[in-house]
Image (cartoon, rainbow, N blue to C red; front, side, top):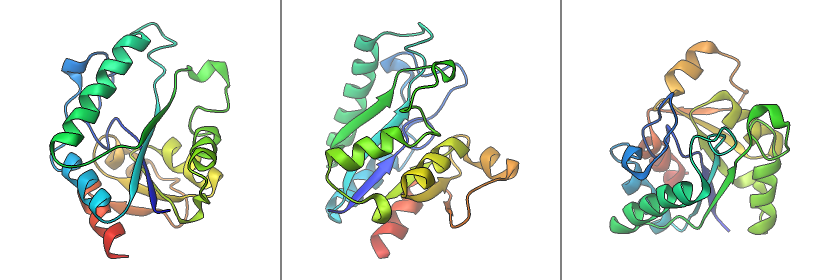
Length: 178
């Protein structure tokens, strides 16, 4: 199975230091939805893996998160794409859970649910913790410079072998050609 794991905020949609707390605040990065559709057309299944500590912090509830995700799914569908599943960690960093990136728990669960070895899976994110989770789970780390990606690159410490692209559209084109 060909699978790609995407972070949400900063990869698919614009990020906010104040969190994305409502469907109205969720706005796709130009070209990201079409990139998902192109990956699908190239035979890839696309899964989202996202830390959503705003739930634990009381900034929004599960109904709101579901409404945000429904807006995203419908937007991707409108351009001919499909997101197979959305995995998220609702915990804050203080909870020390196994599912919050940079720990690999969420990625490992994706591998189990899709019965696939993550060694051939590209995991695309804009933060160091996205890349660290990918490496810890045995996936291929990909940094996009959208969202917080440029800041992540400048701070350094990026895992060896990480591919770097301007945005999801550029990353998708590379994946489809390789």
